[in-house]
Length: 171
Image (cartoon, rainbow, N blue to C red; front, side):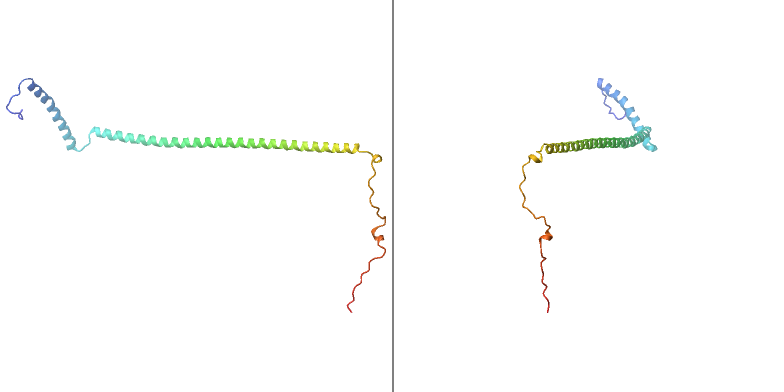
């Protein structure tokens, strides 16, 4: 041990120091020698190669997963659009069915109204006929007020002489 001075280290301290130097010096020297070999040859270490390969695999896996997620999103979008379309079709069918039922009810109500009006008209006609039959006969009727007497001559005969019209002469 050339780096130490001529002084002696005594006791337990000296022993601990010498043991730690014996253990640490070869480890430090081995670390320095392996680092100098890697840098002097210029080739990457096995760990660096493995790490680079693992990074490539992770990137490839990540891109595959992203592509798969895109496909799944697109498929999900297609499925959802089909469901929306089916729901809209069903809603349209229900609306048409409701409109048809409403139109049918209106037709029936209109038919009932026509029948009711016809029945009312028939009842009114029957009442009118019954009222006419119950009217007193002409013999029991009071005599109607006399109208002023008109001559039985036609209007042409009533005028004895035709009117005369004189036309002025231009002389």
